[in-house]
Length: 130
Image 1: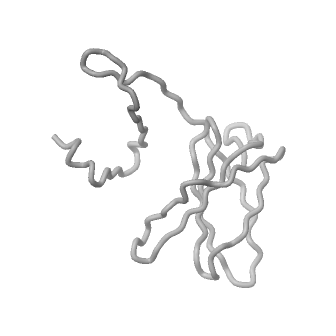
Image 2: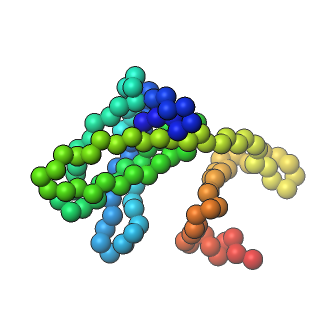
């Protein structure tokens, strides 16, 4: 796992396993927790968890970087491919959530979304519509 701009290895990163169900074609479901890995050269080992002809899905994350998703097709009788995952620097934001009187809101939750990709809030669509 490398820094995309400098090609320097990231020595600490997280790898999260994902999976797809046939009835939800094209949608990847991600495990809540991944495996945190440390290696001076950014290396990791992985094992195919699907049978031949299926894909393995992985999400790579590191502090200060945008996550990146990778899928690998598993082929019978072939070595698993060596892959290089380059992560781009992310953006940080900070602020304060306040009520109408300017008082801090305890327990407020803030989320960031990539507006270049489709966004569905599901059950929350009605709350934010209009």
